Length: 66
Image 1 (tube, rainbow, N blue to C red):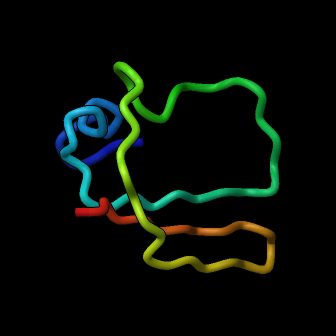
Image 2 (cartoon, rainbow, N blue to C red):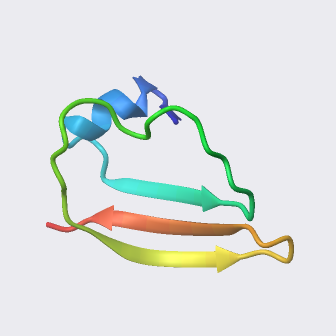
């Protein structure tokens, strides 16, 4: 994930992300990079919308709960 400022993984830990779009595909990948870096610190988010496509892909949008 990248933002216009650089790595979104770095921004996520600092609470700098207000909206997150997650694209999921019907593919199982067993290895990869972490979505966020740093220590585990759960933050409240809420689903603000989703869209599914004929190929099985889904785009889910989340916003930070305030």
